[in-house]
Length: 591
Image (cartoon, rainbow, N blue to C red; front, side):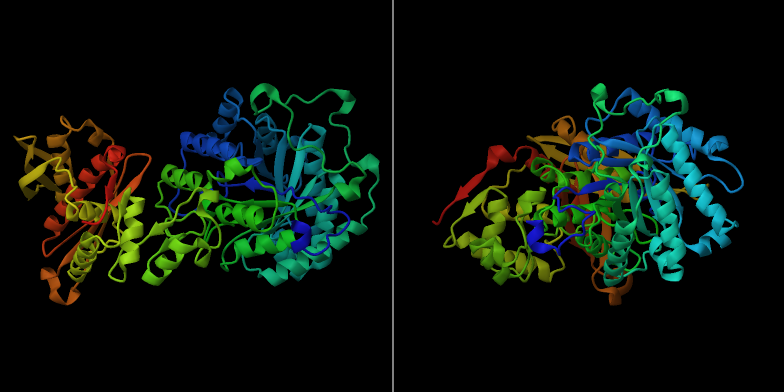
């Protein structure tokens, strides 16, 4: 239980297991270099997050760009099932009023129940960025929150640059929070916007802020000011199916002092965004903001794919349902596909290598008891254990890997030793199977005499021609035999490998229509002996996907086209094997 792990909490933070997760992938995450989201991308990600059980989803800044306006309107037409969609904006501009600020009208038009408002906590930003006075900044915070409350919105206040502001001018930073709370904000979120704060500093500052908030004395009448003058109800269209009431109810009803709750928003510029969020929660924070896969500006935001399992499985907090938690890995990888960024294989919890074991001693131990080298069961977050095959592998690796492919091998089977020897021989030639498991499965089936020859390549030619407009055109011709029938096809591509891939698909798709769904998603080339210059041996890794699964194959040759040919051919073959795997599960015992 949490109470057994964490220090005794302060009175305004009752020891409850509920922790509110706030996702900002669609706004803060979209600021990641190399990441661009279309309207459809944002809607698809929002539905992934909704299915994961995330209670708050920040949709963007309505009015800042047409895409975000359309996003909120589309969700009115097709609402989410459980999540609260939140609009994001800044305080009003200096020298005006919130009621006359056009930016805030766009926020209200979004129709969300909740609005996240960010304001300046650091006096440096007030003076240098806003070019206004400290007093005017406080007025901007108060006026904007009171206006949003008068229009029926509930407010989350993001205290931008909080930790830097607190270090440089503690009294003023605290005053900004006090004004926000007095104006009607229900959550005060402390933001480490520059990402330079370390965990011990976060613990100290959050602890001090919690004690200060406890001392505030704000009367009950100030908790919820009238929503709209004259008693008229606000016109807010629910963005949740069926118009159900928000799951985010007033947190405590005993008074404003008890009702104020703290949140945290951390960036990863010092490599400790996750650690900082964990430290803040230990000091009483009850809302944690972050992004899927840690996407974000510069070095990224706190990664919810690490935070959620840490909070739920290790600290005992309730973030999402257990049946939703098992979808975490799938959601992580689905979002990676949507944003068109390669998944981080070494990401904690959800990465392809998070539960991968390579050393023979490690594999042997894990086979006996997974606790020996795993900190939790990968199935709890939808991941799986992987046995990595390499020249460091022992017989335990081969046996364990075979089981993941549906092959139950007997340790006494001579084929096991043959596979191991073949593996090490090929890796001495430059092959690398720890990153090309599909090729290893085909190798294993070959050694066991169970590799079904779906097609045979008789030969290929690739021709490249440089045109007048300085463009290089590639044409590939392949000769393939399928079921005793010779097929000769050619195709063009924007490069020799692209042309070869297209020609192979063209020759095979009439026999194997599933090939149409295979996409070549990654292509990597490694020079193995750079001292040989242009005669160097080349290793090519090719990744394919069918929209659900990913697999990688390898080819090695002194000719880069031949290496590419090997990898592409095996990639297409394995995709077909994968689709028919249930029909070819093997049980191989000793002779």
